[in-house]
Image (tube, rainbow, N blue to C red; front, top):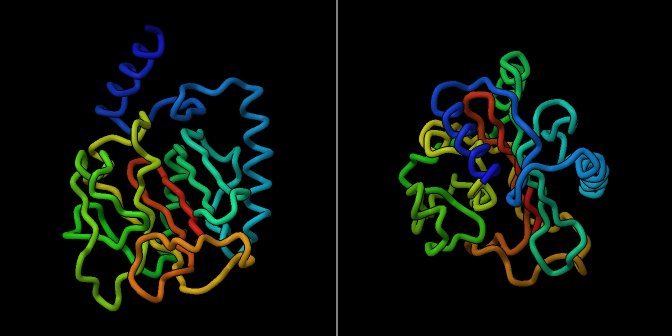
Length: 216
């Protein structure tokens, strides 16, 4: 009952403004302080695992309020990733937005007619709920981004976010960026030529920043 009440209060605050006091959150509920310390260590280890070239857009873990952190840097023959959702003060958010604008190679919106999404599955609830689509006929200039499925059920990611956020793609390349034995041989549902590669970027709106890195 307390958790339901907490989510209700968060939803009211989100619907009225951008500024509120966030708590460290995951899909199972609010983290405790000991969890925070362990997660920060895991976060730093993940950044080191992938290296600076692929992770230079990720922030210091203490720079804002964290609403989600997920990573896979151990399971071989699968998608490797870092996902992070952060909430920032106005001043911090402005700096981060300028960074994204100055370093992006492509800019997209969830309201675009279609997007080039990794591991797209039309049956996933997030696509039906927020009505963004994978491109069937891709242009040569289209580059892959994450499918944002990890954002589902997160209290800070609302329907408004999917209507108004800007997606800044900071890098996407074909090729092998991890040792062969770690890489998936299944691909991630992208066209020929993208059997291996990476995508990294940020989706930004109203003091909320969604960061991603995927390597396959």
